[in-house]
Image (tube, rainbow, N blue to C red; front, side, top):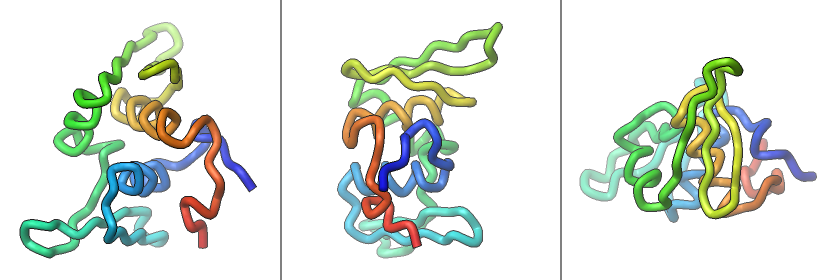
Length: 116
């Protein structure tokens, strides 16, 4: 079963960004709605939230040349990269949705997220 990228929650997006970034050690906490990755430098688990944390998102945004535009009348952000156009409530959310769409397509199989 596939789910559209535009309908995924932020913590599911964070998990998919971690997968796309190649992190091997990823945990997701469904209760707290958080994603964790193992920090290679210190071998600690750290919260990974590029949809809300600019210091984690900006390296991806710059590397992937993701651009964002705010539409005041609609109160929505649009992001695009390599032909992918997608919307979000914040610039980081829209940018990470565009990044995931560029890597996995407009829809993702639920097994990629490992839903349960």
